[in-house]
Amino acid sequence: MQLTRKIRVGAALVAASALVMLSGCTGTSQSSTAPAPESSNSGALLTIPREDTGTFSRNFNPFSTQSLPMTTQAILSLQAVGMDALARHEAELTAHALRGLAGIEGLEIYGSGDPEKVDERVGVIPINLAGVDHYKLAAILSFEGGIAVRNGCFCAHPYILRLLQVSSEDAVRNRQNIIDGTRVGLPGLVRISFGCYNTLEEVDHAVAVLARIAAGDVTGDYEQDPASGSYWPRGYEPDYQRYFALQPGVPARPREHRMPRCGV
Image (tube, rainbow, N blue to C red; front, side, top):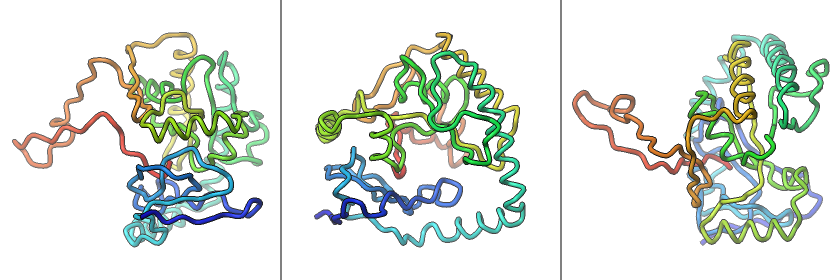
């Protein structure tokens, strides 16, 4: 049984989603989605949504108590640093990133790219790179640059579909493809997000790696997993025991390449 909630067109419903620093994939993510047979750990179904209907899995719980201790500690930490100081730091990082990204051929920034107007935006920069699928761009940044980004339609599917000018026919076809078990060719963006812990040097590193990718300087030979959409370099065999063994001498359990999703 699925819990379905009808949403009136024009109603102010987009998404109620605490980001990673506050929620940590603990069940607080929520998004407007259409029916599908599979659900995420956060309770929100993973499909291309319709604007007139919201459908959530039977596990959907917007008031999960799992997130409360983490959220409380995060709020205390932010208060200790000071929100004004955080805003200034975020603006500095964003302006620095926009200046660097502007020189990369084929890279499109969605939203204002003016570094002099960072007071009108937050430290989130959605991008796409011409000729590179957003799933693949995110994978290369991760495997070859050690850079974690988010890709897809985030928790704003209807808005992203309009931004990318995806027709209603293509949206219907993409929904059916997901139901049929494939995420190849889905529309989306790559999102660079800054936190209070990021530095200018890390921004420079991200810009440099993106410039390399734009120039075709990619080391790995990547293949796509149709079921998840994710790309993996061929022959990639991480040493899980080195990083994830819970007890000395006890081999860690290998993890499937398909990455878990949180509030997509």
